[in-house]
Image (cartoon, rainbow, N blue to C red; front, side):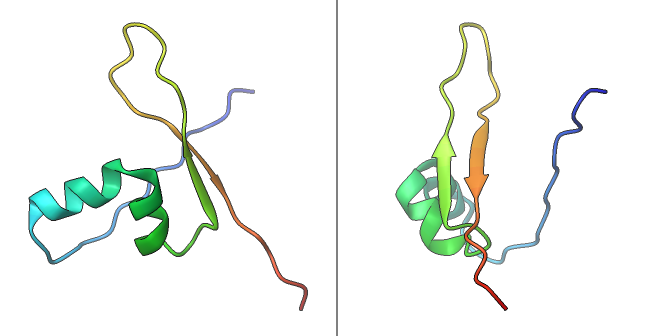
Length: 62
């Protein structure tokens, strides 16, 4: 069975250039997207146009 990609959408009220900047730099992305403890940008293969990411979350006991 093929894995289904995760699609996330949220409405953000801010300047589109600022949002783009913060979403394209991994360390800035980690600061505002608090759902994840780490966001790693995966290398693009030749000819790929979409950027993929690996997200990780630390789950605390209790």
